[in-house]
Length: 259
Image (cartoon, rainbow, N blue to C red):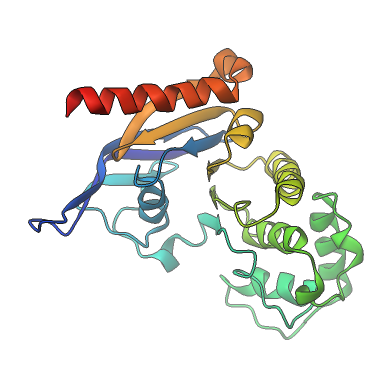
């Protein structure tokens, strides 16, 4: 479970270019829930993810994971609890190493274990089972160098590597934005299979309105550093892309009236 309580962050405070990134943001994501975050540029999406992961210190407010206060902890102290997949498929994997070697590095990243036992039969069997969840055939390419994979395969591998330690929260930071539309859809389908199979609590930021409609349990729209709109349940099931675009238009009109 994720709880963000009254999160506030101001950049360049007291200067002409002062920017309020998070303005008392409140958000709760229940265990096993898949939340999809949308919003225009500057709405606070990246600042929110950075605050959750620990790479951005809040001026005030709290970040809690399963009731435990994470607010004062650095990134490496949160790493076992929070996994993050970034936009660039080149990040998160070692191009010159094989799929299996990348999986091993991810497994040992947050442990004190060494490479002494290496890629033994037990590990390889486990890696095949985990990769098979994606439905992309990567379980049959354990000895393939990662730089020979497609962008979609590499991004999907990054996902499985990120969640190998059974994190309490998965952050997807526009992880399909750098992919062509067809590949992005393939990666999203693989993402859903992994999230459902592992019962992961997931928060995904996207600019893809169709993905926001098609995936997740709840759409969360940010504006000016706080939650502007939430759509869940039956309303989420029936929402369309024009509906979401209409909400953006309403938000813009409200801002103009307030100015």
